Image 1 (tube, rainbow, N blue to C red):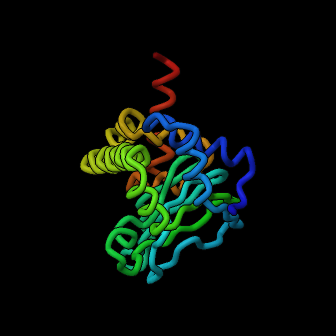
Image 2: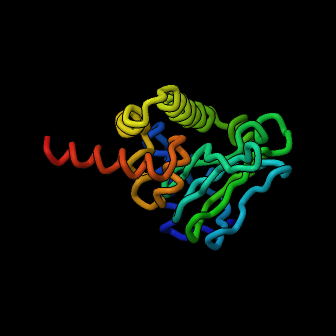
Length: 205
């Protein structure tokens, strides 16, 4: 038996609903496999060298996913309320994670173990199709960010971030600017400048 409240169940349903239609029976069965976890601001969810065995969805707060490059942290993703995350490479091939996942606010997530996810996928065509659509969205989101980062011009990166990255508005809502700057491969000064220019232009339109 998991520890999800009725509100948690509603948020879980809201995550999956846009991907594909779900019968009540399938959703009720899959929700049994999710477990809720809470973290304080600054706590690690996953550390370098640990194995990623879960797929998680944020119920409250923001997750910062980063790696270290020559001693400096580099943001590879930011996951706010309503979106999913994990260390995909570690999850898929069972290798030690190169990523750190950290709560940058007080955090609540729901997670499902990989083994349980695979059981559900094998036993239910409906759930299998649902996960196919979920991973399509995840891959599109990652590809859109790669398109953004291909541009050397900070102004272009910032505008494309708003235009094509699905999670942009969600990230901006609760994430401190320094993490978004890192996500866009900018210095905090560059990000502050581009943010001011972008929203000033928006107001004048």
